[in-house]
Length: 127
Image (cartoon, rainbow, N blue to C red; front, side, top):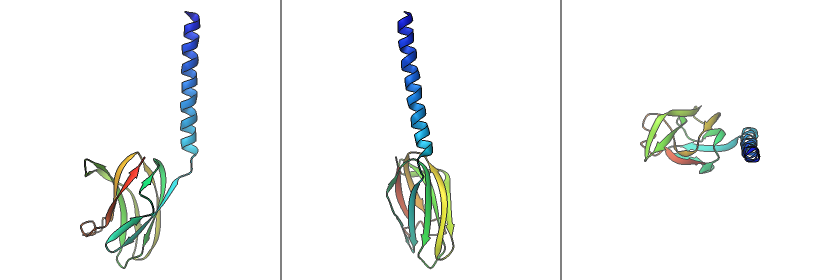
């Protein structure tokens, strides 16, 4: 009986040590990076998927109008929850923000009046 308890205890310690190593590895991993081009009336992300965690996002406004970049979680095809992370820029220029994203499917969009409706949105997968 004592041997069985020691074996179970050893397994638990090994599992905990493994999960701590994974957590420490995830925390020390460098941030993912993504560049998003904005121009009347389109958004083009440099990638369609990202790893979960810290993401450095740059918004490059190549258009004539002011644009911003917001992100919201998609559930069953509908945006849910508040807008997360905003990179704001004036007409022409580059801005940067750091977002912390959980796994899921998101929509990136410009929230300036009428811009979403005119096509300034795209999806992003966070794994």
